[in-house]
Length: 372
Image (cartoon, rainbow, N blue to C red; front, side, top):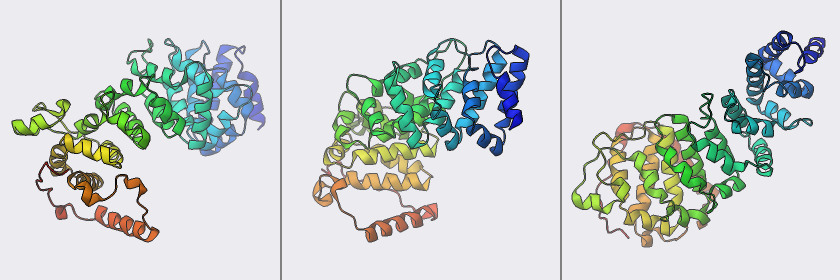
C-alpha cells in the first residue's frame, strides 16, 4: 500500500516525464495479475490519476495509461469502479478520445468503451451518460461508418461491439431504429464487410437484436430497410436456379456471381438465421418470405451447412415458411402459451439433436411455392 502512495504522487501531468513514465508503466504492469487488478479497482485516486495521463505528450506514458484502463475495464468489477469515479467521467473521456481524429490511441478508447458497456448494468450507465452528451449513439455510429476517420491510423473496429452492447438495451434499439437517424441504413453495408470479421459480427448481432422488436418488423422488412434479403444474402452461395426461380427472388439475391461465398463463421450464420426466425414470429413476416421465395436460398444453404445449430435453425425456419397459415393456426407465435413441461421437452430434444451425428440429417425436399 505504501508503494501505491508513492506511485500516486508521481502520476501527475506536472511530474518530470521520465519519472512519470516509469510510474505509469509500473501501474500498467500491476494489471497483469488478478491481484493487481483487484487492488487498482479499489483505488479511485489512482484510477483518476491514470485517466489524467491519457493525453500526456509523452506517447508511451499515454499508451501505458490506456493499457491500464483497458485491462481494468476487462473485469466487471473494474468497469464498475471506473464508472463510479467522482472526479472524472470515464465515458465522456473515452468518447472525446474517439471523437478526436488525431488521437493516436483511439483504438484503446474504443476497447475501453466496449468493455465498460459489456455488462448490462454497466451498459445502461454508459448509455445514459452517452445520451446526455453531444455525440450520442448516432454520433458514434457516424464515426464508426467513416472507415478512415482517424488520421493517426486507428481503425476504430472496437466501436462495433459498443454498438452491439447498446443494442442490448431497449433505449439503444429504439435509437437505432429511429426513422430520422438513418443509423440502421448506415450500418447495413457492414453486414458484408470482408475487411473485419469483428465489424461484420457485431453489426449483424446488433441488427439481430433489433429484430426482437416486434412492433418494428414491418418497417425493417419494408422498402426503407428491406432487411430480409440482407439477412439472407450471406447465407447464399453460387447456386444455380432456373430463370423463373431467379425472377421469383428479391433483386439482390438474383443471379449471384460464380465466386459468391457463404458466410464462413457459424456464429454469424446462427445470428442471421435467428434474426429471420424472429421476423417469422408474425404472419406478415412469414408471408413476405414466402412471396420472396426465400425457401430457395435456405434449401441450398441446408445442403451446404455443417453446423448443427445452424441446420436446426434452418429447418425450423423452413418449417414455418412452407406450412400454410391454416396449419400454423395463429398469426402471432409469441402469443402461444407453452407449458413448462413442453418447453423442457423441446429443450431436451434440441440438446439431443445438437449432440447427434450429422449423417442423420435429412435433405430438405422440394415443396410447392404456393404454400400460402
